[in-house]
Length: 381
Image 1: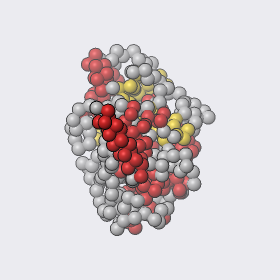
Image 2: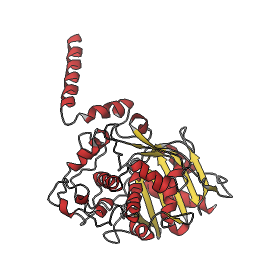
Image 3: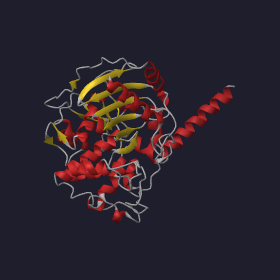
Image 4: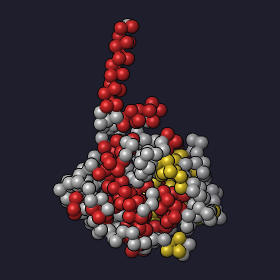
């Protein structure tokens, strides 16, 4: 038994040693920050284990108005059970720009931060719109090679900035959150994410079809940072966080202290009320309290399908039609949602530990429609 145990320990040490000297050495980081904590993928509070850059509270905090019927509605019992089953930590209903209802679970509260995951893609797209508005980027059709002439691949010369936002980049990238050997996992742990991204060739002709790839948004973040001469956190603060009166600080994960590049495709730690502000900004076509922060033409383009009427993506926003209503979403891993129903002037926010249900359409799981139905029901009362 002792011989077996010693052999096992030796084998484990050899495996770790081989990982350390291989191109998969980032897995050791994943083991310590994710797997040894009992998770098989990124989780809501993982920002605490990574390096972050702080986004301060606005100099002029602008609290949400509370609806006259704020939290007067008793949440339906079946929805309460659904939230507990799915690990919901926050559910928020905003009607006519006032908070009508909010409920928190599992020790989370109004100021609790959690990982945005890919909801950050919508925010990075907003930063793209701002950088175009300010003249840092000439337009959606400006070539990415103007900023990174070293990008690789047969179609690198054809890649435009807009292709990165509407997910038609043609980049070689496999979107897999659970396989530690795939590029999406490595992007979460590598010390130099920009080097990783610039090694992903543009193998397919851009602008032809929708293919969701986190690497495209990461490259977009790199373009914005280079075009503006600012890190993404600072640019986010001056463009939106400060003028929109965010009430709480946020944290944006970076690859490492050495390189300091934000994980643009994910990983802004904030709270339900503050995430909801981007829903209001887009609902109002780029205006915040009558001040234009984003060009309305860019917002309109963002909230409509790029390729055809059946398409489900614009520029950084998911698009659906449900019960004859247009539905717009910021979406993140494990079911982080800001859901916008513009025709009803409603915004729902759901943050939680997991998605629920099978896919109903190409990319939409059943839980999304459950949150919409319950949100609409609450808004009626």
